[in-house]
Each structure stands twice: as C-alpha cells, then as structure tokens.
Image 1 (tube, rainbow over the protein chains, first blue to last red):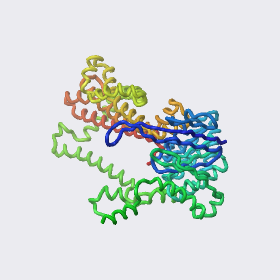
Image 2 (image 1 turned 90 degrees about the vertical axis):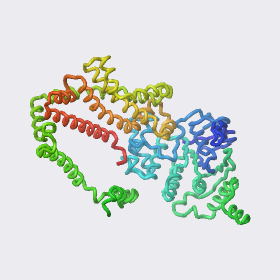
Image 3 (image 1 turned 45 degrees about the vertical axis):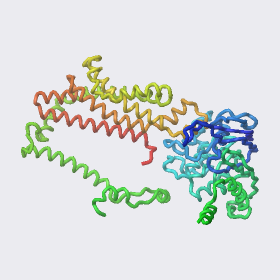
Image 4 (image 1 turned 90 degrees about the horizontal axis):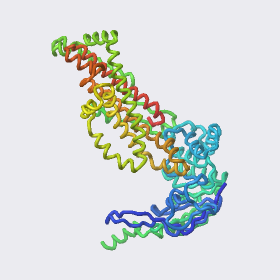
Length: 278
Length: 283
C-alpha cells in the first residue's frame, strides 16, 4: 500500500503582476527539482516561506501541472488528482455541517463501491485509529484544532491511498498538541506503511518525522540538499528524543543549510554595523 | 459596574475560555442573562404600548375618532374574525404572497447558482440584474398592471419580482464565497462538479441563501399590501384602504394589526426553518 514518487527536472512558473511597476512577468516558483521518494518512505520537505514547498505538493497531488519536467507515481505520469494520493491541508478542510464521522464518510462516498453501513464502519475504524472514537458524532465547531486535524487525517487515510501528502498539517496547532500528533502520525505510518511527503517550515518537525529531510532554497525554489536522518523514533514515547545529542546534530545541519541561504543580514550583524557607523 | 457601561459590560464579562469549557465538558453561562427576565421585560414593553393605546384616546390626548381605544379595535377584530370576513382577506393575501414567494425561490436559487458557477453567465447577467435590482418593485407596478391587468397574475408577479432579488443575490454570494480550500479537497477526492455542488457548495451556501429568503419573506408581505391598496377587491391591503375610505376606523386598525402579526409569524417561521437547516453552526 505505498508508491514510489519521482520528480525529474520539475519546474513551475506563474504569471504575476509586479507590485511596483504593475508589469506582467514570469515568476519562477520551482526550477529543476529532482526528487526520488521510495515506496513507503517518510520524506519531509523543509524550506523558507515562499520557496515553493506547497507547489511541489500541489504538483504531486495533481492539483496543478508543471511548466517543465515530469512527475510520476510508480512510473505512471501524474495527470490529475487521484484516489491513490490524498492530501491533508494546514487549514482544517472539514465540512462544518457534517459530523466527524460524516466527514470521513465523504471520502468513502467519493471512492464509491461501499454500502452506507460499510462506510459508517470504515469511518468509525479510522476515527479509532486517530483516537477520536468518542467524538464521531461531533460537529467540527465542537472539536479543538488538534481534533479537527485528526479527523482530516482519518479522512485522508480512510480510502487507503498509496501516498499521503501533508501540507504543514500541524502548523496551526499549539506546541504540545503538535508533538503528540507527530508521534501519532509516525505510529500510524509504521502501521500502514504509506508513502508520506510532509511539508513544514519547522526544522524540529522535519528532523523528527523524516527518514530523509529535503532542504529547499528559495528564488527559485530548488532542492538544496537531502539529509538522511537515522533516529530511533520508536523510543520517542518514553525518552525525549528531541533533547538527544543526535537530534541536535541533525537539527543543526538543517538549520545551517537554511541559514546559509539567508541573504539578509542577521540582527547581530545589523547591530554591529550600526555600532561601527556611530 | 456603572450602568452607562451597558453593552461593554455585557460582552466583556469574565467567562471560561473555550479550552476550559472543553475540559469541563460544559458551557459558560452568564449570571445576568436570565431568560425569565428577558421575556418579562419584553412582555412589559408590549403591555406598556397596549396600555398607552387604550388610555391616550380615553383621556383625549389624541382624537378618539382617528385613534380609537385598543379595546374598540380588538372588538372589531374579533367580530371580523368570527364573521369570516378577516379570514377571506387574509386568505387572499396569503395565497398571493405565498405563491409569489415560492415561485421567486424556485427560480432565483437555480439561476443564482448558475450565475455564480459559470463565469460567462455571471458576466452577461450581472449588469442587467443590477439594473433591475435598483428598480423598486412598486415603481414598476404600473407596468405589471398594464401588461397583466389588475387580476391575481399582476399581484403575484409583483411579489415574485420583489422576492426574487434578495434570494438571487444571496445565492450568488453564498455560492461564490464557498471556501476555496473545501473545493481543493473536493478536487483531491476526485468529486465530479455535480457532486461537488451537491455535497459541498450548496450546503455551504444554505445559510447565506436563507438570509435572502428572510428578507424576501418580509418583502412579500410589504409589497403585496401596497399593491392591494392600489388595486384589488380582497386582501389585507384592500381591507385597510377600503376601511379608511369609508371611515371604518376600528376596522382599519384591526386590519393593520393583522398584517403586523402576519409579518411577525412569517419572520419567526423562517427563522425557525433556518435554525433547523443550520443546526451544525456554532452557537
């Protein structure tokens, strides 16, 4: 239940109108992106805002077509959205007029081929998986942010996709909820073995989750380096993995890569400059 | 707490935040917002108005011929209600406004959805509709009367016209403003356009459409009464103007009160219906 994803020389350009000169010009969002994700792998994509992380995800999801290059899932070129891939967005994209269970059922209605009872059962099972059994009959407004995102994850998994695409899914959550959901996501991934592509701007999150962390650079969006992360995450439940030496090293490695691209001077540099002039 | 703080105090009162409410599995309540008091004060307001109406003509603060005391009006109302006269006029008005109102909804919702959904229809029809929308229904009543005569058709048509635009515009707004993120997830799930409309866009638009329907409900009665006052031989509007011309003053007031109650009933009915359809919304 997992697929290989290949991106070759993928480029994406958009038409934009300049804020200053009001001229129409091309904006290069992505250029020459190569990425080969193994079946069943958990890859995180980290980069500064505006580097085109979400664009990569949209392309894999089939929500957009690339201007250059090719994308393929298990060797088949991506031509549009498909139920072999699912997406969890940062905003909770739940239907407010449907209960948690009915929101999961929506995905199963889209998949088709199930009776009403089978849908309800399957939805219940996946709500179980994300620990929301008791909240199946609640409406989204009666759920906390973390719970809503769990429902979205349950919905995305319910139709058993080969690939799970996640676009900063925990970005709007508080730190504790986020850590708990990260651990739960890893547990689910280990159980289901789905290929996961996870986008984040949070370095800790990228290192904690990804077997490999793809670090992106902006203007134009490119993959700068791919770092392999070897951490024993199974133990994360008991030990504070994020406080370990190893974790700190990986974290620093990603941090340095992201920091190097910062053309803008840091605050200390500015302070030094001001001091010198004065 | 100073009494001048009023709304400020009411809205900024200390209460548990949503996380605490979640932990307690309970909802915070206001100490000062007791339902009985709210209802009591509301009743007191209405009673005061009734007493004023009764007393002012009796004390000759106003001319009792032009504003008879409330009990005279109510007696007249009762005799009209028992004789069936009131029912005849009420029925005439209800049928006209009901038919016009329902026809307007039946036409405006699909048209509004089509306008919002397809860019060409939107671009073609928006200026035309803007033009019509800004033409008051009563201003073109003469046109309706000229073309359709003074019978039922012209009255139903004028109600339809008045009810049409609020529903149409709210449908356009509701459909056009559906959260793009929901549409993206529909795309990810591979839902067909028709399914997307049925399962996502339309339900999302229902609360907005209902706002238009409620405005239309009020407009239906308002416009019909006016139309009936101009030319009709039955209906509440006709009853009001006929009584006035014949100096049947208590009858006139009785008819006016009936239209008020009818308006109230329609509005509350629609609010209840709206609540039934949007139980999922946050309180």
